[in-house]
Length: 584
Image (cartoon, rainbow, N blue to C red; front, side, top):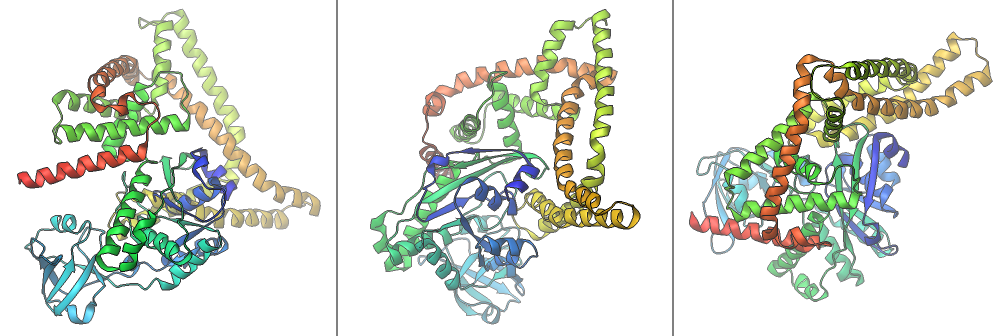
């Protein structure tokens, strides 16, 4: 498993490993941004043996199911995996009644035969399952008002009628029994409480299962199990040779005094479980960088790069810290102006996005713009002089040499890796489209791509080696020892070619700005970038100096309690939402 990470990831950094208990039962809760790779990432970095709760749908897949079984996984049947379209259409009352339910009226529906109390329904383009409280007849029933229900209703065009899905209740007694046995024996369990992987920039609502498991363990065995949050932070998660930072946060524990309320059942049980779930969610937010959308994520990444000093290499912990400061600061400032920021802020945000888009269009990185600035200082920006001409000729020489050496180094990659790479890319893209079409929460479906590439490669790589071995056996005069040496060299040459190709790509990317400068149409755009960057950095730092003091410890603090800060931000957000509803 470590070899899979070393092949498919360029760099994996670990933060907060000291927060992992070395002995005894542990529940790991992680965000789910990269499908099957998430479990592999945690398992290879936490230094504990983990048994994952695995969706039954994945458990039944070839390769994945075998790997999950080998790792001691526990299959879980999910209601959403067997969701069915309900007959007819429904509408709901605008407000809940005094007993915490909402009346649902159907048209052409068959509530009495298709649904049972405890089943759930799901509205179009939403992921939340809403529990059925009671059924009166085929066209009348009530649903429970729980967290997120009113928000889900607000997304629908009621009182118009809409279609709905049925999620039948799943009995998880056997799952709970297996999990509690593993924990009682000192084992560790890995859970993705969001319920499924996605490519959003923030957490999905958490499922209550993790809270029920923790309370059940306390009730049955008297063990208050540490619930350790894991933040999986990827850079280009769906790309080959991407980067990742795995952050382990401080553990969350059940408050022992709440066990009595849990044992009472009913509303008291729901209250303490939801309270624990809120604390778990807050701890998970403390180890990721969560933002509302992709544009905001791009703005924050660009701002972080421009704000830091050039030439200083940050550690993974420092990058995470600065990224969260920008993310939480952005959300708090947005709340302070009621979602209507001043024009200066909007202008700066637009300029940051435009700068990032220009870098993308030219195919260069921010750190390379600094190099362009140094080159302009050395060579000047006037007409081409002798030194400038020689410099550009030297670039051409470097490119020629790189192409020659790269061609020789690429020969093993062409035969051993290219066929698999092309096939896995096509396959993973097809799987991405299928997953996106079937999902209610995915944005582009990028979260499944790398996992599907890995699965495809696991099958195709040995198949390709066997094919080459057969060709050498039948169509060459190699004797047994020579053939054995060739075949056993395939893995080594394949891995070396990956490393060589990556080094070559780094060189190509570093040379790209200089190659682009040889093209007249791109030269002016490249020449303007250093000045654009300087102006952006100056205005960004000025803006931060202006608004930073109002953010208190986010601006001044050295060591921050991120669980406390993310909780405060969420409380501010909830308060703002309540004020907005009152104004309406």
